Length: 220
Image (cartoon, rainbow, N blue to C red; front, side, top):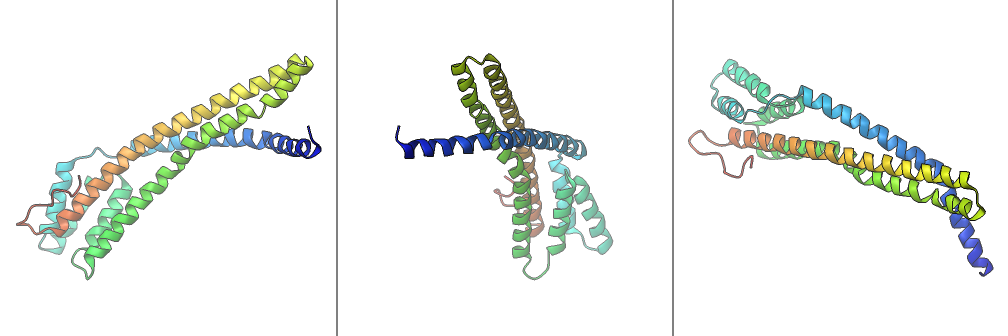
């Protein structure tokens, strides 16, 4: 083996060896984060109200057809109560406030886009962990294999055993993190997609004249 090649390999080995502790810490942090997200999802599900498309449609129609301030205020309250979450209730209130104002269509489109982006931001955390968890688990598996093989070559069974135990443990941690994050992402993706569909339907109802049907694509 030439001297430059040996020097490069030594540098690579030193870099990988230096990553040992950071990777193990990162794997534990990722597991802690996904457990926090799991708890947050449980709280979110507990606070959510059962979806009622009929009640939402009735409330949206009542807001659109309201003739006086008191009637409109009561209809808006019923619309917010028909929302499945506080975030959805807030965006519905914002949409209602823009109806009848100059540039209402553009303001409503911006509100819908911002609401969708907010949902995507909440999903990004667990979507990142879906990939990061197994990646950290794989790195944490491969890094200890080098000293484990070194111990095997020297007949050091204790070194071999310790490093293999670390390698397999980090694999399990990484896979668990990825599996939990994937499950959380699936549940949230379905919930947020339904919420956006409902908000989009309400927006279409509020902007459609009473004598015309709501566009078929709204809320689909």
